[in-house]
Image (cartoon, rainbow, N blue to C red; front, side):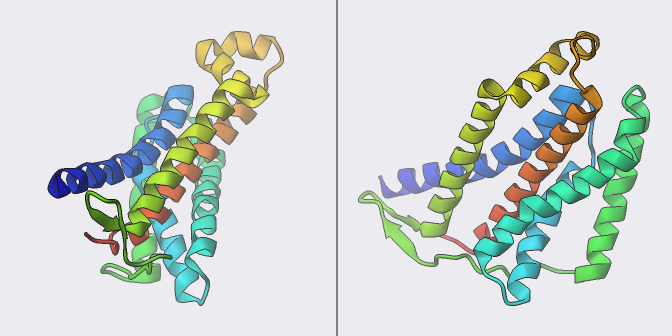
Length: 212
């Protein structure tokens, strides 16, 4: 039973991270039909944001708050400088975002150097779950991922911005006809997707240190 529960929790931890990464990508691809090959770099930016904050004396939680902000900033710049000019040219978008991913990879390498960077989880040790003991931080990670998913679902289904997003997905021309600023909706959605990817990177940065 101990092995089964631990395996299930390990799977749930991995699913939580992949869910956040996929959720951010689904927002940009589902709304704008943009194949963003730099999306993985948003995750990396979030992870390095946590490392940078901790390395300069800040707490993990401050770094985790900075992670989605860092991802959003990079995403906003990318959308404003490149993506918005290529919405009607999907092949060009693929090539452009691939180039951006290489630039970001090299930029992070030049800034932080090669090799893994240590990030200390906010809570170390394990919790007794009756059937097994499990790293406390991974349970926090699963909880944050679940709350983030719930928040995104509520945002899309219960807010006016979510209604705008769903309208643009269904019919962009009709959305523009009823007064929705589709360009602004695209920019916010892309930035939001990048922020979620940054959050995923921030969570996984310390997750590697919380081993069974």
